[in-house]
Amino acid sequence: MNPISTIIFDIGRVLYDYVPEQLVKSVLPESCFHELYLQHLFDTPLWLDLDRGVVSEQYAAERIANISGIRDCYAEVIYLLQNFVYHLPVLSESHNLYRQLHADGYPIYLLTNFQEKPFEQLYEISETLQMSVGSVVSAQIKLMKPEPEIYLHLFEKFNLKPTECLFIDDRPENIEAAMQLGIDGIIFTSAYKLESELHRRNLL
Image (cartoon, rainbow, N blue to C red; front, side):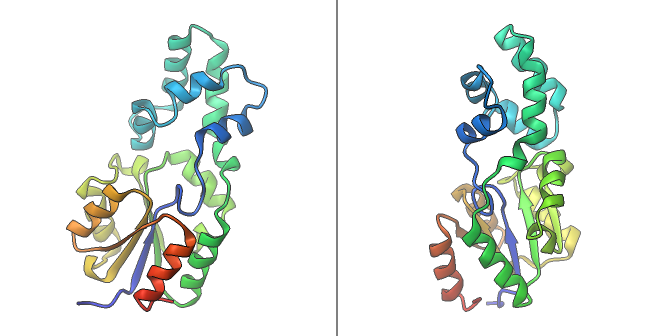
């Protein structure tokens, strides 16, 4: 068994919390349409299409406006999509583990289902994310976890050996897909449990 030499992190619900109800309230506190956005935008096929990079912000806004019959929604959806990353709560203990692994010399990569512009915005303001060696973002390559092709793209792009990688993600299906390709995986449920798993593997 090859020793782990490379760490791969997911972002949402691992390094940053992601609770749609809180995001809508934070980004659009005066809006009357919170329920509309929660029902028809977040965690829907439309959101997945945004993450895959196959539809634009404008398309999503038009879709919501048409569903609701309220044109005011168009501008609000655009604003929401362009600003939600600035309201993602930092999971500080996870960031601390990330920084410790980085300080210990492990190259860290990001593998995330994320919209392209929001990812760029988050990366720009996050010193932690900037510590990564590189990233694979779903919207940039039109592939998404848990599709095997996105993991294979990561290996090829950065010349990584799957058996030398550890992947940390909050979704069991994403970890299962990674493990089927030979990557060790940890399902993230809390920073405390992640730290315990890292110690168990002698990575901390």
